[in-house]
Length: 260
Image (cartoon, rainbow, N blue to C red; front, side, top):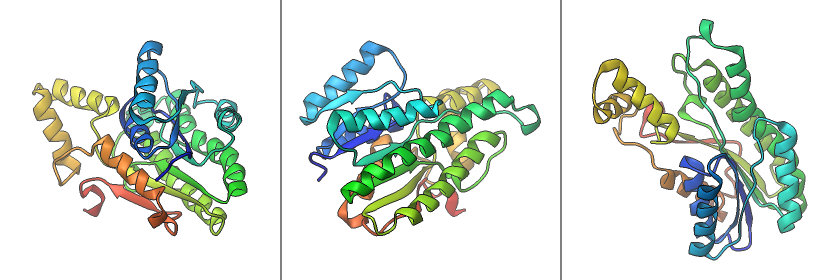
């Protein structure tokens, strides 16, 4: 379906981003991986996707906290492949604390990576996509882009902002062949969430399994984690012809969390 198209997935060396990158590669898109991690592990992931799906996969370690680096990632991709068709803004970090104790440095870091990086990537990608008459921008927001939770001031603010950005870009690109949408996952068992499970287990002196159940029970009626593969499928759908008229919207993949 996506043969010869080029997709950047930020924050794709693990977790949700990697699941999305694998799914797009399965549909024959060439992939630009991005994120931090051990160089040999990243190379193993890169080579593995390339061999398994017969597509070209490159790695770019651009630092998503720096706007200039994000814009260079777009430019480098266009130089390397001659085009850019799909931009998935997935990179994100988390920190939790009551608002009165929230360190300003953490506030700025979360907004830089979870929101500003998407702005810089979109601003650089849209002209390329408009020129081609086709493009897909998918912002990985969160259930926290639609509802709040305690102790997550920066994360919730950034994800709400990301959905607002999605609406504006959807309107600005309407009729050009470019769409912009947000995907809002509930709990996904990523390294970020694994840490929260460990914190609950330590606080309540319970097992990891019971802590995971407690986390899900509080928010997610399905009592099951969303998988990176399911989110990859959602992104793939948004890149399909069936989604040509879906733009400026947020799609929840959250086991019923935001239906409550």
